[in-house]
Amino acid sequence: MRNVKLIASDMDQTLLTSKGVLPPHFDRYLHRLHQAGIEFVAASGRPLYTLQETFPRFSQHISLVCDNGGLVATHGRIIGKSLIPAAKYHEIVRFILEKTDGVPVLCALDAAYINAVDAKYAPALLPFYHKLKKVPNLLAMSLEVDKVTIYFPNADSRKNADRYFRPVFGQDYTVQVSGETWLDIQNLGVNKGRGMRILSQHFDIPTAQMMAFGDYDNDIPMLETVGYSYIMANATQGMAQHAKYRTRSNDEYGVLHVMDQVLQAQEG
View 1: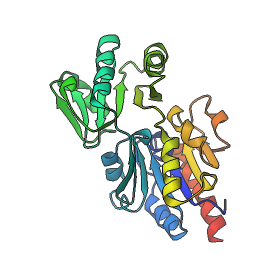
View 2 (view 1 turned 90 degrees about the vertical axis):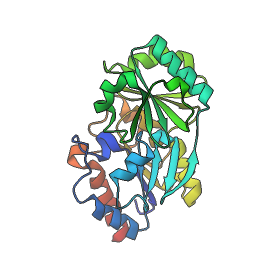
View 3 (view 1 turned 60 degrees about the horizontal axis):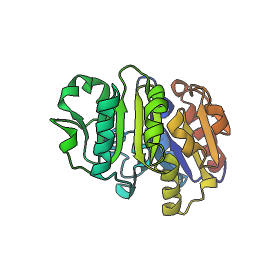
């Protein structure tokens, strides 16, 4: 662990507790990582503005892999983004509305957009998309979109992915299940692993010297990219094959437990 130069962590059910908050005294860990010359990365399906609000005092001093790799920022500067053309995301939205009971969400760089008729789902969306805008018709919008998210109120995202979205869009887009109620569609090749490679090139840090933590399917590309990959004790079934190591659950602060080991190895 003495050669680790970058530590990336998923947020929900990984770094954040089940109550959706950071572990206590996490700012002390960020300070210690900075002192040790280790870059911290929050890697999430959440957008840039939500992650910046999660780390209000530190967003200018850490890196953020946002929207599952659709946007990458470091120390307050965007260094990578992959936007979906309007004609393409209109096609995806139209398919969602015609074929499924999912709620389409256009994840733009400035905010998340939903159809006004879906306003009743706002309470489920706001914890992840702090800037949520309701518009008359998504199909009339022209935005900087890096992800189309589909919210499934019946918690059947995986079934919908296999039945509808991978057969129709899987060859041309990245289709990722991000939770029981979430399905994400992005440009082909966009994922958290891509985010790690962008940061590797930017900081000139080999991926072999990177560490990452995750718990769900959308973390797999990141875990398979880095040299030190950890799943949480609360990770979903089947995740063990995609990581080299295992740590405590998110509510037992598993990420901090391993961070302590890294810092002790490098500080000692």
